[in-house]
Image (tube, rainbow, N blue to C red; front, side, top):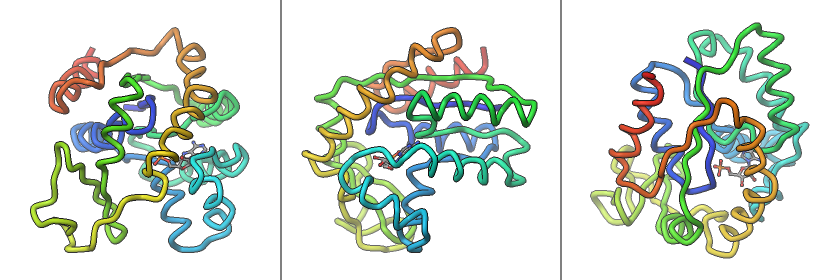
Length: 212
Ligand code: AMP
């Protein structure tokens, strides 16, 4: 199964992606996670990407496309994949089309999770993550058992720099201008899901599409 999950930052893509990937036993490929890992390890990609990520801007296409080319060549992608946060521009979508053509594979589903901006700002500003293991929490609907401490590894939870309100507004602006045009790009294949519903209902709607 090869899937793209589209939607604005904070629409719940990461949470839904984890569930779907477990269900279908496919890798969850999040460009945001790969970039954060590179920033943490201070790799060349991380050092170039950090300035963009901290201010909510998109990392240049050539960096992302090279990074994804490498990721697709890994063995686990043979059984399928779910793309979360990629593509994010028309140039990336065209590069993805070329990569898929070269690998002689195609996408099975493209799902767009839709959530209004004000809900997103409310949600993201309550999001916490573990810098140690990457687990994500939300004070609205997925609270850690112990305040500010990761249930999985005990790490001290923090708010991502790019989850602060002014950066979120910028990320939403970037999304509307640079990523939302992908909805028309994929119009023949895309299915919309209402991401304002309860997490479990959104999952059911997504699984229904994947089984169709
Ligand atoms: P995310 O965790 O998907 O919200 O991504 C966090 C940040 O990483 C974004 O605000 C961008 O700065 C950068 N990023 C992630 N994926 C991409 C992408 N496909 N293209 C460009 N920048 C990206």
